[in-house]
Length: 421
Image 1 (cartoon, rainbow, N blue to C red):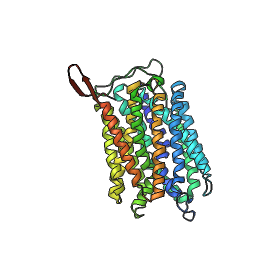
Image 2: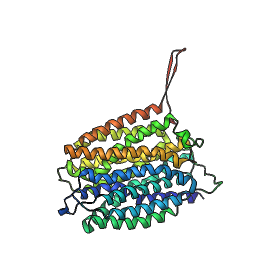
Image 3: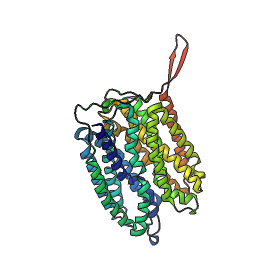
């Protein structure tokens, strides 16, 4: 049965490898803003960002009902629906034209975005339920790493399909391929049977112990929920801003001297996936809150310096820092949700928390697109993102530092709590 848990974990990773086309959107976006004579659609940066932004919003909003459905009906059916909608959505998007934005909005934005939410909501909770609390960070990191690393193969594949077959056929080919593969992986994602006893794990470190299972109504009444919500929204704003525009950012800031934007999309994705696994493991040892604080600091520094990047070496470092830090958050927040409110209702609890990612995903790419359209530079958007990450760092540290005051005894006690989440 323990071996079955690893099958579910790897199947969840495989499903996310298909759903991760969301993170390769900047390759399509770069082509869509090109003139029709050069194989593009002549859309503005804001127009080319809109399907991606709608997909993020649908992804985040769908996580709540999807989480509840998978808690009640099981993850296999919900994941299968996600795979089917993702494939159909890409096929519908293939009917977009230079003068018709609607098919991309409906196909990639609404249908595929809904599919992302259904599939993603089903994979992580199912895998976590097979393992002891000491491995929450590791298992969560492995499952969501599939979504993060997907652009490593999707970005160059998409670039090849765009150059060879054009925008419409590229969407169509990817739609059919992901319809088949995502649905196939979904059949292996299942919850443990009733009465299943999780295997014991060797002592790993001071990660938070298992908590009593808490329903969503009680979870959202806690200050911790809203503190985590704000941190997640700030981190997502910065990360998705870069991911959604990476290929175009490279071209703009290098003065079109560097045209290999898809390479940096893939590089960012590699570190995105690595951050999910590495940060998940680290947080099992030193605690979630301090790990969140550390990655927010790294990403804030990267954002403040991102406008100065214009060389291959600079973009490598920038992509690595942003990708790793953003990816880390996608493993840390679901693990924290499980720590705080248990795994029984993790689908809906994390689904509600995940809407913060959607808030950041709508704000970040849209803000970057509008600032770039009006000023010709992404610098202003970077600075806003850096300030938001600084705020997230402060919130994370407040949850890690416990302060108590004894007025009669005139005592002020400050205690660092590694288990504070």
